[in-house]
Amino acid sequence: MLFLVRMDVLLPLDMPSSVADDIKAREKAYAQDLQRSGKWVHLYRVVGEYANYSIFDVESNDELHGLLSSLPLFPYMKIMVTPLAKHPSSIV
Ligand SMILES: O=C(O)C[C@H]1C=CC(=O)O1
Image: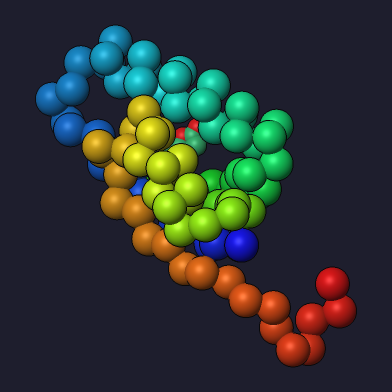
């Protein structure tokens, strides 16, 4: 099952930079593990925003929820999920 996911990162302005840097480092490691596993298929920065658009390929809504809610940045992100279906004109 494919999902388009937008994540907007909203770190508290008063969060110490050492804490933010630790969360971002753990987020990067987790995100790269998921990319290597094939579940996090695409990850793009939104130009000019601290946000990304991603494509996930997972078995279920519950699996996606588990992956997203395990992101170290999860408490600090607004996440929007769009389920994707095959387009009738698509050739892939
Ligand atoms: O930077 C972001 O967009 C948030 C998050 C998603 C992957 C990652 O490493 O951080």
